[in-house]
Image 1: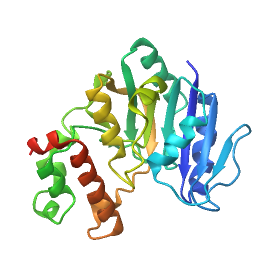
Image 2: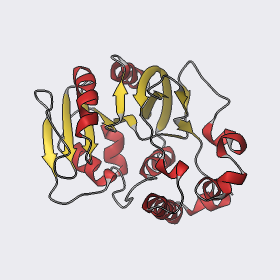
Image 3: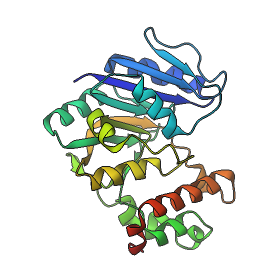
Image 4: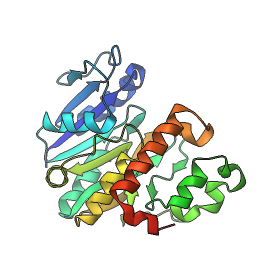
Length: 252
């Protein structure tokens, strides 16, 4: 199956110098969105660059790029990721064998090689409040919410997932068409959870495929600082998620 790659850059020219050469040999086409000026430097031959006149949300940029590509599968990659040489082919081969797999995610690792919890359970209201407020100092999430992050599971074979961290995902175009793409109303954060939740409700499977490995320099800004604009964006996103999916209110 053919694979299109989408990368949205918001001032990440340096990161793209590492990502694009690693990604290009694994896909059939790459589209890079320059969400702000001077956010894209030199790119591999054949890479297309879309320059925005005004910044858009991540989800809106992904939708725009999906419409500009033609691959049967679409990979979205954050600029701070670097896939191992066979990451995309491994994910694509798995999806080829599992026609109801709409989203496949790799094993994520920090740049130093440590495992990163990218496969997670759908969030609950109380768990989100704890993680995104100073309550996390009293109830450390990696101690009190191990089941949310699935910290006690290190599968070596593919396993189903509720949702997967959106930093690097391989998606089936037919699923995106059916769902109407990503929800551009999410300014930042939560759009990956929403996509996986809508996919689940529509009967599409989400799989974690650990044989595919991607390095991810995960900043996790909102995990380290409170009362920033990122915290506000996350709160807005979670409110949008709950308004769209009020059934999650029952999962306190």
